Length: 187
Image 1 (cartoon, one colour):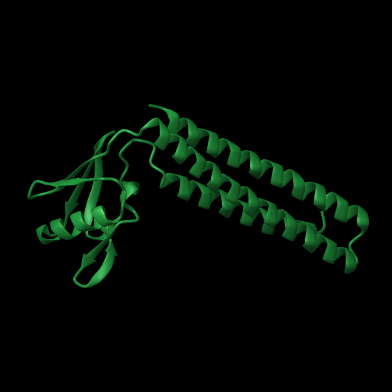
Image 2 (tube, rainbow, N blue to C red):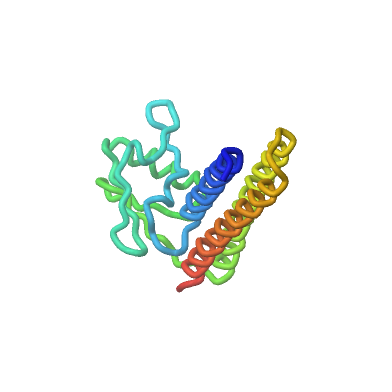
């Protein structure tokens, strides 16, 4: 395999891997009815005048499938954290017991599950587009290499390898999506 083909494949593999990682990151933010500390990643808290992620001012744990516990490092942060969670529009209502915030995560309705499933599919389509863009970039690189002296047979072979890599990563997107959709639709 020529160096040009190898470089095109490595570049495409790197971009496709990043697309899968981003998809997994985005899907982890979609709650599937189970309490998970990552649900509060988007919450920002007013900490002495600056907006700070809640994870930097408190411990966030899930005690069971329906309950999150937020234990601030300073008791004076209980009210700002409560305000931050409410302002984040997550549909969560924290209860303050003077020591920690207890958040009961309500079960999802069928309509909400379908909406979350659509959102997950949308994220999956974004990952597929990123993978196809990586394929296009690799194929363009190979065509440019053809103009620089790479034989037509090597270009065809390289394009075939890029397509195989694309198919592999699109398959990964499908498996990640189907696992997430099954998780969302499970009651």
